[in-house]
View 1 (tube, rainbow, N blue to C red):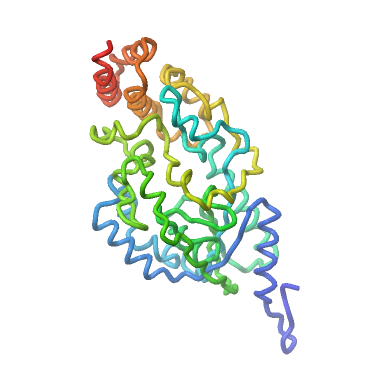
View 2: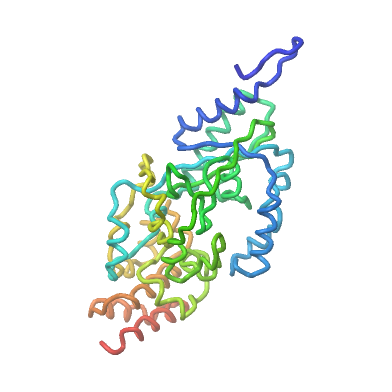
Length: 361
């Protein structure tokens, strides 16, 4: 029963409702659901310091929203609780990441981006969950979020007992590692909150050691300006020359800190068909992707998270990877075919890549 009677007045049984929400969420395909309050004062201080240090780089939107990111009630007035969810995304049948990374002529794409855009998948499921809540409690106000607004989702998920913030700054779970997406529902009901999960990183620093660009400058501190995910996705300008050789064959994102994390021994593959690899992107040559024209890029990557970086940035990233690859006549020919590209950004990175092989040309 969601409602109980007190002096003949119907009252909400929030404990029962919270349990029902978690059961609905699991039925909708979420691997875990938790509930937190909206108090993020310590996280706000950390955010402001991170911004002051300039570690957000060119991500102006991080500074634009300011403290609103740490104040859910300013984002959605009336919010009392945040329902956090996680959904596994690691595809079951993909070429092993370490093998791809070791083959310099292959393209490595972060495992989360091999299938359908997760924003669409999570938003749809979260909205279904919100609709179930509204159907039960018509007077409640709630709104779903999937990276679509300034939300400190890792902090909220930790408070909701979904895991803890690892030293690489991602959320970690003892049962599911870190290969999962997060989403939230802001709601105006005083639901019972879950107990924050303890940190279990211990003395391990594997993620810090393995980072190709040493972007994890201290435990729990990431300088995004050095992060390969930032460089290949968020940065729209030239990639700093000194960082290009460190990127290897990573053309969209980087999973190294997750691949080395001991807790990912317990991670589970996804059951969502939408997250399965498309167009063989888990094992494809750099040259094959580099010759895609814009129409091919748009048709093959429609509905993919990769689509949003655009063809120009796609070519920029692949040019860097080709510069880091083992020399071949075919590789040089592919690069030379882009020397007259209309984009100065593409031409710059192509020229750099050719210079990397000039002793063998």
